[in-house]
Structure formats: C-alpha cells, structure tokens
Image 1 (cartoon, one colour):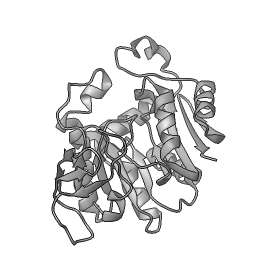
Image 2 (spheres, rainbow, N blue to C red):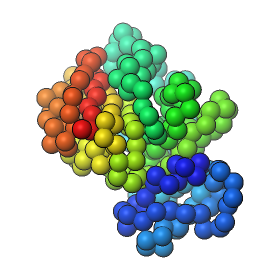
Image 3 (cartoon, rainbow, N blue to C red):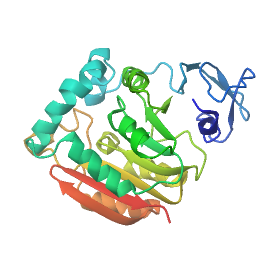
Image 4 (tube, one colour):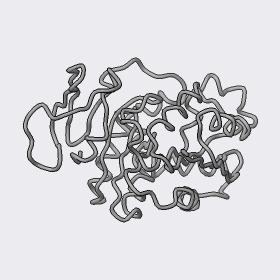
Length: 265
C-alpha cells in the first residue's frame, strides 16, 4: 500500500484515529505490517500490501456466502460474471459496455478513487490504467475475492491499493476521496441510507458516486430475501441519494439494472 493512501485511511474501530506502520518503514510502499491506530492503539495486519480490517467473521448469508469460496473467486471473471451478464441482460449488455458507462459518469476525478465492493478487481484494474496516474483503491469484504484481485493486479502490472473491510462503514477520513465506484453491489446492502451516508462522508466536495443496482429480479423476486439481495426501484435510489445530501442524480437504465451517479455538493 502506498503511504499516501494510508494517510487517507482511518481506524475502523474508533472511527477517527490515523493509522501508521508499527515499524519504521522508510519505503514509499507498505508491504508488511502491522499498522496501529494513533487514537485507540488497535493493530491491523498487513500482508503483501493488503490491510485486513475484518479478520475472521461469521459466514455470510445468501448469495454472499458463495463469494467466500476460493473456487468462485478464481472462476469469477472467466465463467461466473459472463453467465450473470447473459442471464440478467440476455446478452445485450457486456462488461465493456458497462465499464464505458461507469467511466463516462465518473468524469475526470482529481484524487483517489475507491472501487467499493471491487471483487476480483475487474473494473479496478481498468480504472488504474485509464485514470492517468490517479491513485485507485479496491475494497471488498471477501478474503478470497480480494486476494484474487491482488494477484490479478500484480499479474497485470497495475498499481492498486487494496483493503479488506466491511461496508457500509468505510475506513477513510472525511472528504478524502475524489470518486467512489460501486459496480453491482448496492443490492447486497439492507441499509441503503447507512451506505450512502458513508459514501457522502468520504467524498470530497464535487466528488462523484457512480454505482449500479438491481431494480427487480422478475420471476426470481420471491427468492430475494433468501439470497440476501435487496433490489430497489430507481425512485428509491434517487430518494436515498437526496437524504444523504448527494445531488445531480443521473441514471442509465439497463433492465434489470440501473446505473446511476450522484455528486457531493
């Protein structure tokens, strides 16, 4: 992890303290830890540049349980995601088209960009290549997915910082990020207001939030609760952005998804 990125991070335990390497590390990259909080003295491990704020946790429910599988992480980009694209949009919207919409809505961020729920880093890597040197950070709660993202970024020779953390609480200082991308994970969050409140907190003035969410599950709607999925209509997403203080709501409909952006004033 770049030292500049570490300066943007806050302790998730006391939600305020800055983090510093426990040992004196003169290099610009922090590869191994731990790091400690200057406020509450909590310690968090660092391995191969990845800070882990989660540790061991209870198994998640529904669809998210599958994301904790190493085999799912390894096959996600090649097999699982293409299958989901085909099933959801009937082949009418592939990952390249999806990324181009995200990239257009993000504009030209002037600072650090967070890929929230980055998974294996599919879009994180593309952002790191396309943003002309702007720092990019990937965050996910699944250990297998974030470890696969780290390996894929290393193989692609792109510079990305990764954090393992559990949203909606975001381990960043207030007004520290130029943009937040959240591709395809808004519908995993039961408490939408808590999520968007945190996004608004960490965005700089003028910072943009770009996300995609399921608006419906069609015939599979009755299974949503069992799968721990929470699809929401566009109106609900727009109103939640308003409550969080995010303005200039824009959207692109790709049923059953909606891709939208909003901005911190």
